Image (tube, rainbow, N blue to C red):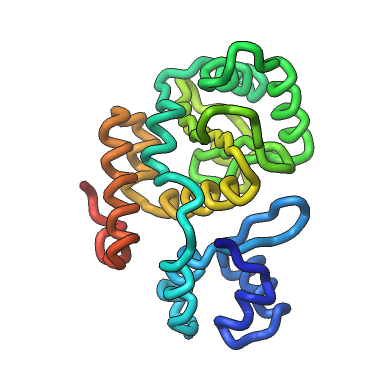
Length: 236
């Protein structure tokens, strides 16, 4: 379940302009799809607690009632795979290597998909900072596949992605969903777990796949039980 800016404002008791300012100036997590902004209740609750901003407990209750329209991120990664030592020294080379590893039907035109990714990167970097990128087109990648997945590629050599913090990228997450709502849920899940510092360190050091999956499962488990804030900066 995703919230509009107006709905989010009602939980915080502020106007929509304040929500937009918090997104641009205070790092409130938000996702743009089809040129509209959406916010995830779980991400908003965690951000509000960390930022010390009062928010209605109804937001957390809404998050807990939200339907699970996408599997946990760890399960999505098990389908999509975690690949180490992915080749490439430039952005186009890396994107080609990533597309080649996606678990897609044989009849799908990978060259076309690659051109879509390249066109998206030409519009602006999908690097999000701290050496991580989430390549995706302007609209969600919705394909006729049996199940949604997330693929993680850990690069052999960090590559310049024109990220906002100017850090070269060493880890790329790519999502393929069955529906737009599922894409939003997957993006929210990914955005949330990537705030975990130990997970980012595992990505930076190209840790084994089992270690990465274990950490993600820990973060997701503690999120469900409400104890995430107490463990998120502790090494596993």
